[in-house]
Amino acid sequence: AQSVAQPEDQVNVAEGNPLTVKCTYSVSGNPYLFWYVQYPNRGLQFLLKYITGDNLVKGSYGFEAEFNKSQTSFHLKKPSALVSDSALYFCAVRDGGATNKLIFGTGTLLAVQP
Amino acid sequence: EAGVVQSPRYKIIEKKQPVAFWCNPISGHNTLYWYRQNLGQGPELLIRYENEEAVDDSQLPKDRFSAERLKGVDSTLKIQPAELGDSAVYLCASRDGTLGEKLFFGSGTQLSVL
Image (cartoon, rainbow over the protein chains, first blue to last red):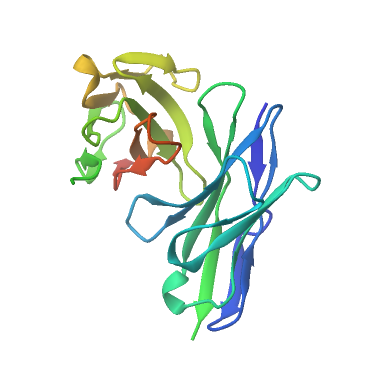
């Protein structure tokens, strides 16, 4: 069965510093990996995805994520955090060889201090 | 282009009462999802439609939950009777399978069962 883990409930970072939000996954086939962001009282918004190709994928708002097959990880990164990046971030995975079922992690709250 | 529209935005009911949520996906999106998001958790899939067909309802508590997507466009999710544990945010999402893996989410319906 597919699963995704976000080991950190919250990540705190100072504005201007680099940020990393961690995600690990488990699927039986090829992973389709995603990051979504949720602002207060809003629906989830797509940030980026990895399906195939380059391990480093770039997404919206300056975010990027690195696919690491050996570590089964897909960490979200940004070189310089903004206060406006403060939100809830969800990693999600789909087994590319099986159903169209997208499984979400429990989320990581990113708090960027001015 | 309008996004995924959900209504109502908030709903407060007493336990054992029925409740219904409505979702209008983005025009042309053939895949529609209903997710439930408990406080502090990631979204959990309840049901997925491909056009008017429910292709994955394994997580839907069928004793009290039902859903329909007549004509393969908008969809309704119903709970009858509601229980205290049903309090959550119910999210609808849609996807155009021909354009890739990105899901578009509505703002959700926040249900409080008293």
